[in-house]
Image (cartoon, rainbow, N blue to C red; front, side, top):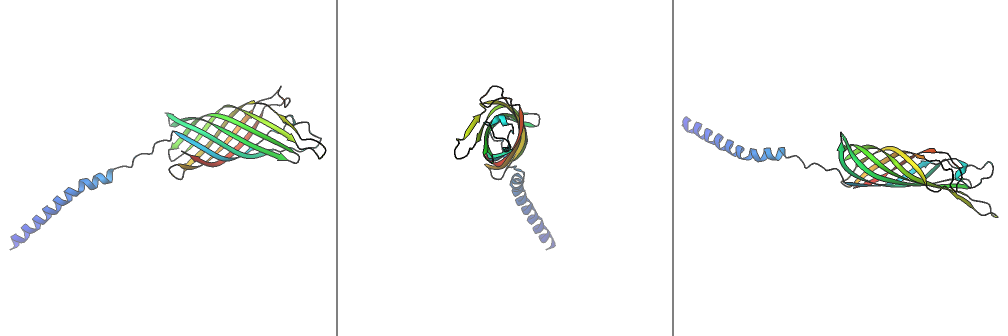
Length: 216
């Protein structure tokens, strides 16, 4: 009787082990399957609100009365598009451009400024979120206005297209598979204007900041 019980126990263990062996490969395979890696996006579009310093030189405005105050900062929008390709060491390379347009007002004066900044970027991180540094040469322009009194017409003065250089940095964090929160900080050097409609102006540097959403 004892032998029968022992044989029954061994048979049960053997059958249980065989069943476990039949299940283990599938379970192990399931446990070792890694999720498919997320690829870097090919194209990212930025839509931001922006704030930027503006030049304070009187040469960007029409003739101003004495003691007229002019603005030092403007607010507006910024948009950008970037294409990503290849790597250089730990950096993912990208090319693109941003366009920033702001308007600054102070008392009876206003200054509208636009900046086009093509960029080569070096991006560090993962496809779900990364930081970057970038820079390039571009163009910009300014339009200064003086709002006159009731009996006088408003006046304006345009700078024409000026050369610019920009350097900056920023980051993007994707909160869904296609939408990210992003920001950009940038310095723009606006070239001197010696012959334009706006009269002679010196080269000047302005700082701009923008924040908003990115889409891939």
